[in-house]
Image (cartoon, rainbow, N blue to C red; front, side, top):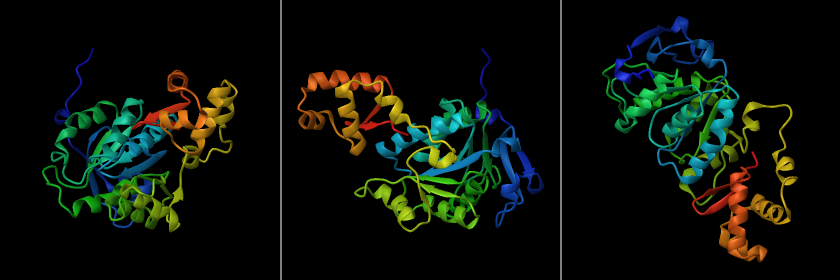
Length: 294
């Protein structure tokens, strides 16, 4: 088994604007050059999407990432994000875990990653054919202004648009969405619970028609024929499983709540729910069950 390289063992290289992918060359204030670690190949950006979100990711946000990223990777889409805490890091990590290629755009120099805990993630990105990019000199320490500035590169590299997963009403993710919109990119947002601050930004984008609401990967990939997973699931269920599934399509519920609504003992339900989860029909997050209907 070959020993994997640590990120510091990768040489820092430069690429000039003339060699950028076309979608990055054309943006306002496109950088004159970029510094990077990894192997640069413009072909990875031909099918690419920027995904951004809150640094204070919730269980809901994590569940969205777990649902969307594997399917995007299966569609051979390169995922671009900002390497910060929360949604950014989880997107990079989930992409790698599913065999995809991910690109991290730093808010500081390549030798000054802003999240020390992401040392292993930095290494994993490079060891799995990804890229770590910055427009700043290798020893430039990130600042308050450099993060918003780098967001134009995050959105600028993406051909498929910008997806916002969880964002406060005043957040860097909304800056990326605004810049992406100015660049002519498609902007997508995941709706969230109205009582959660992390959903205020995404819900606002949708309400103000600044982003398309997304509830499935098909909304992002523009498949002409949407796969009707419900039909496949339901024909393989018994009567009790169908009742459970139909209730959970309306709202997420705990096993106690399901027991009260269906008048079925928790012990019996527990067995059913376990089997339905193993079959990929349900997901449990924070004590609530959700249908996998994407």
